Image (cartoon, rainbow, N blue to C red; front, top):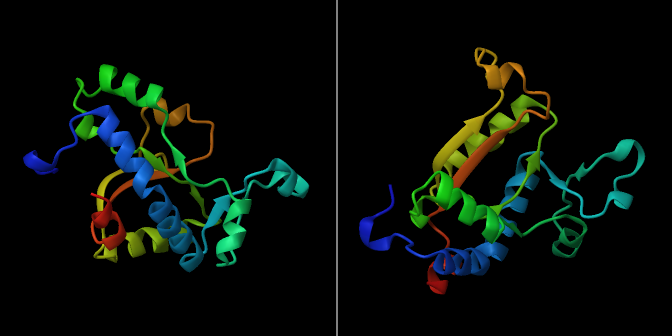
Length: 166
């Protein structure tokens, strides 16, 4: 839970903070990807090669990050809609402004990355959503035809760089 006195109360404040920590978050995600066999989304379809592959492993070189689609922020319009429809205007409940996608070839690789996130003292998992539950026979799960995913919302707790920004 977010401490009462430290809650973000305005959309401007939320978006400004997200913008300021975006680069540190991108580097964190790229590092997690590199250490756990994850792949990042390619920036240009022309780089996808045969078969339309849209993900590739990062080689660890800072300059090569430009070849990936990174640093996306959730749109202000989407945040405003979520505030109206789901969160009764409580801005502090919006957890997914800084967004990245990692792709894993196997569930084992995905699990290893999730384990790394959970064991990192600088990260705190605040929400996990998954479409990968074989026991889920709800109408939503049975009709799911897209790529299965696990969505993990994390709070970056130990970033000295992020702390200096606020």
